[in-house]
Length: 434
Image 1 (cartoon, rainbow, N blue to C red):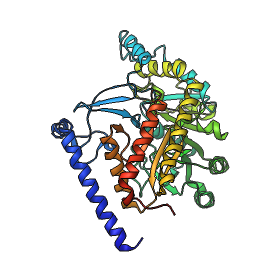
Image 2: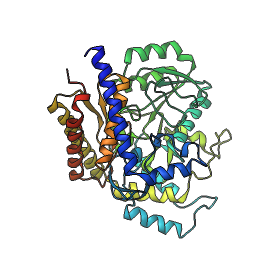
Image 3: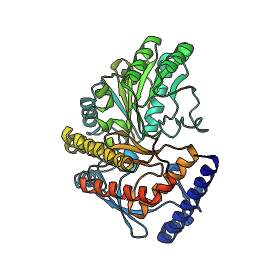
Image 4: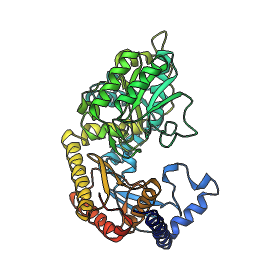
């Protein structure tokens, strides 16, 4: 493709996105009104940055199963699942039942309850690397506590992380990192680069407190880690006296025992969040007894860990029902097989048309990539998002897809067909596969 062709394609892409925005504005006036009203008291009408996009974000009124209804009365099939947190779908009847029963008994006791130990036992049974576990309120908080633990136990402040990694609102390492990242001494390595990472570890061995990694980049594009890469990190952490911290906030749903079980890993600490609270706010960090017992308040040198809602009864009750009754090994495996089939179907649509598009991921989590330069990829993802919205499918603007249990084979077939129509409609804007 010549420079002139590139300029013409970029101009056509911008025009197509502008037209998609115009169509979206016309179809969603009540969402536009919500944005204007909320912006009077919320910066940008927003309190969760990832949900914002121009010209204004869609506003939802209710959800049921894998369906969402917007303020303007449109029904969407949900292929985002609240960025992996909504694994059980919307208003799962058994979870709704236990929430109502729990509310009838009271909400915040300011003391221990009969539920937290039950959820801890279920999680330790499901993820064999967990000897002991502590609950938090989000994945971000879990990663904060994991790195704070590493710093306290090692006396070091260096944290080895990876380009494209996302470990919560204060641990984002795409595109040079975030200005609101937590104030640790971050050493940023290239994901899946064994030689380069080993060299960085050797260079900074005396200052590294923890090696923090996702076994598949989530927000970074659903890029799976090589098993050999993960085992290198585990070995090197042990060699230099650092903690190996595996972030399974997103990926624990990709195998009955998380990707750590699939790859035969035993991290010092694993961090969790998202779906494990049954749709309520949730986070957790846990791991080896020698690490986690430092949080035993009966010990004279115990590490402190506060959090008013760490053991809140709604998250505990919903989490127990989710793990204990709904998310069996068979159910989870079936959902991930459905996701594998969806990813293969989407890739086949692109391959059959000879287009430079690839869908990466594992099981029920995946991301669509256009193999072009960064600006054009962003525009194509924007166009995909708005074109699929027009066909009443909900996914992330960054082209991330996360299945929930209520999504059926029929829903996936409809999504694949809509994706094919997008490729046909926009083929002249997408590069041909080489």
